[in-house]
Length: 257
Ligand SMILES: [Mg+2]
Image 1 (cartoon, rainbow, N blue to C red):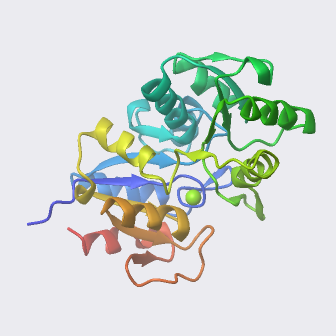
Image 2: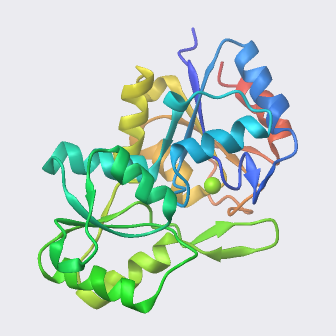
């Protein structure tokens, strides 16, 4: 008897290619739900807040609830609350990250020397001087958190430098390693599992990045389906099922049920 109860969907490179929904995304998720499986959204995207991601999903015709969206900015805020309580946070990231930090009960530090923690994530709007403040905070002993270390992110046209590139800047200058809370670290997955009331073996992780999504599935002991529409084009392992596009997802998933 199958124990699979839910699918944890990656968003960028999987459900969305840049700002548009991937071919077959809406239909695939409809089928998954018809089979009685729960769908949650597990994404390293920290540009956006969960609310912004929800809006994007709903606009594309994908049924979703805020409770079922877990992103790496939310995970960073939760990690800080769990380990340190309410913090003064210096962010090196985008507006969506700031929103999650504030919603998580933390305050924003405007200078590095006022911060208990630095949270670094993806952003398209960064200055050298913001990085200097982040550097200063970490050198002063602030906790150093990375929402994710993805080397690139997927747009319609090309792969762009990801959060990992900015995290590397600070890791290099401070010679400190950031604590990772996003995929492939298990923290974000454990958070999503707790919210869904599920065990790892009851979940199928679907994503486009072998080193991130499939590595996570392997770490926590979930099933994995790699979709070839994003970062990974030539899977290096036979450990997971492969779907060329989301149109193949129901077929691959049916092998696990
Ligand atoms: Mg992805």
